[in-house]
Image (cartoon, rainbow, N blue to C red):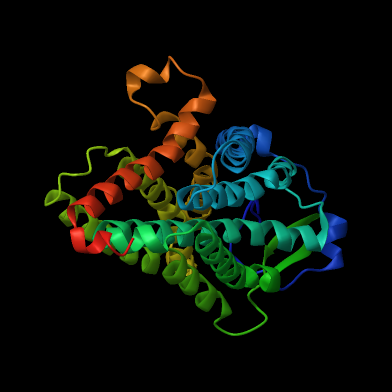
Length: 343
């Protein structure tokens, strides 16, 4: 099968590679003559530019310009995950243009691993933030006493280790072969039986379905609590987090859908499946630049956006949550005389 392997497409029917093929076929890139390829190329370049510099800005502000808090720890880790992924996008962009992998076996494995490390770390951090917010709303006094930057940092490290563990299959199955006169980076699932299905379903369940069930439960609890409690006047933190979760869902759902369909690729049109994988992968990559954009445009109301600098918008978006939570916890503590004696 002859198709572009720009990010992480999963077909593994590359068993019969011969030296005769290499001698007969001389590969010439046709990307610049294809509308879809050019469109995805432009999108990828935009994702790289916005994601790289946008997340670098978030890292600089949250890491060096703002006071370290639990909320800043969450968002800083998210930005680092997105920044690392965007930093290696030029390898995939080059591969997209040349329609050939020229960076060797190690980078073939490493670039793909970073994609899934970004996916798992992002969703795990969103789960952590959702659970943290739920606990803060349900048990405000306990949260005020127990939520510390040190504990948050430990949770982040654990989330990253779990994400690294689930990203290992990319290191194992990613491979480089010569085919029809070009070098291709692809997923070689022919090593063991059912490995393709196991990897695809585990990524779908652990990196998408399971975490979203937890997030939905947490948000349902939060909404019910907020309806019966009018002490929280600002809804900005809730809107920022809702936007982050919605962006992740919209960006990653198409990719997972086509990966699952690919498990029975003989039942579907090959061209549609490949196009869906390409578009789905590009949408998944787009999630890496949406987070800093959301920080900017949801930090202040619409009228104030044009009156302040980009830095103040982002700082407001990330810092507003800490100030609002603090006000809420303080009011709750003052109303509960018995609880306040333990603070």
